[in-house]
Length: 82
Image (cartoon, rainbow, N blue to C red; front, side, top):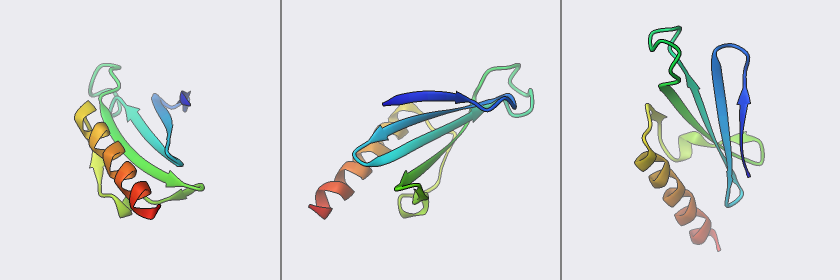
């Protein structure tokens, strides 16, 4: 499932369920610096409600290619655990 939550603070958080992990993409407009465009982003990864981002890296200002790489890292980790 993919869904977006409006935090009510000028930010949104899109959550993607993927292979037992949650990819959480928080975006904001950097306190108005981008004229309301949700451009600044931070990605966190969760497994069973535990933040496991550090196991994969640090993801800020991500692109579509970065999200794809994150998904491939998750896929490799899951397949390696099987």
